[in-house]
Length: 146
Image (tube, rainbow, N blue to C red; front, side):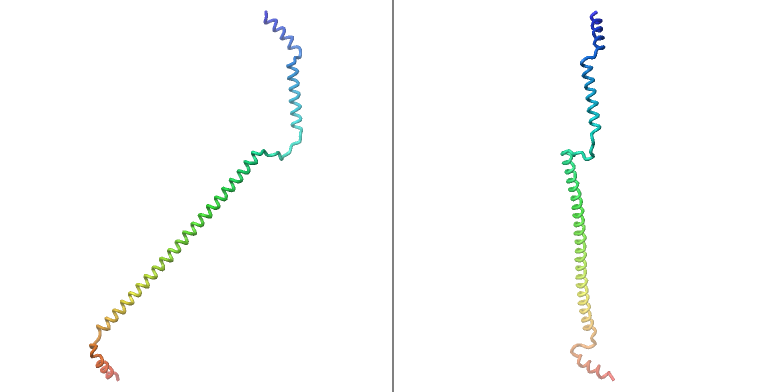
């Protein structure tokens, strides 16, 4: 029977507005008032940026600048290395041509000396008269001409 007594008391409590109902109603009214005030105030597109966000943006820009500078310097370095390689190849080719030219000149001198030596040998071997009798041979050659 205790339950019925409590239920009867609870029924009486539900019929009368209680402090809890008043508190909830006041809370509901204050939430609605706050919402109306928040939605009716003028809004601006330029909301202040938080300091952390500013630092993050600055850091991102700085890192992107470093990446761009690094890429550009790497490209310049590669171009410089390629120029150095092509210059070295040209110098090596010029040196090779000079060595070839010197070798050709040396071969040409050696051939000329050989030809001169062979011509001397040919003149020495092809004489018709000995050296001692050469003046007489010249006299005879003069007599034969008309």
